[in-house]
Image (tube, rainbow, N blue to C red):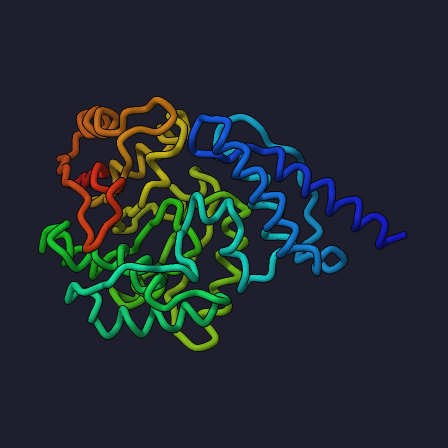
Length: 314
């Protein structure tokens, strides 16, 4: 009887997932391709755990905004995918990371010769199955480049050395390796609850061989404000914040105002919100300086050349 119930629960969540549209493009072709990919890969990497899911949490169907629909996919893969294969889920490839076994960039820039970056990339490649080392190097390096290039000022770099960090939408949470190099302060991760559960699993794998600062996982803005009260912190968000609905962004205004430094990487527009205009208005409202810089990264993909950094500071 228990197996019948687990089988029913598996297919209930499976169908929640594949019928939740997570296509970033509004056209039928994209809808169909992502539907088929989700149907195939979500079954391929989950069926072996039908009777041994990672948790007993009961999920309801979520609908509405883009990220609300993604929740169905995230709940499913966290429950049924093995951690070393979780990056193969279409929802994560679309929203969080794009490292894979296929990679054709040359990586000739001197930046990619950084020994620490190379070591971390090799280590992370071994956590996940069938990941090309160069692909991980390129993907992981894009985060590190922000802090080592002239994207931020020397004064900002000094501030980072002595401050806690809040990352909004930290993806798989791999940046904890670099944050733990910068200083010994706490790391705060804000994300959807399903993503936080995934990040905790990956943290356990990393800590088997590497020391990390204390990571505090929070999915509620009010709790986040309490946790950061009286702390010096900076904020980082690569795309996640600028893809939030406006009402959720508004809940972060006080946190951004109290932070001496906030670094947002953003695409031009998301769900009809023009992000440059949004950050200009936000800077005026909370009385912060706004620095806008074009996104640059060695051998970057063409579509990212329109992306920008929005840096708010005192």
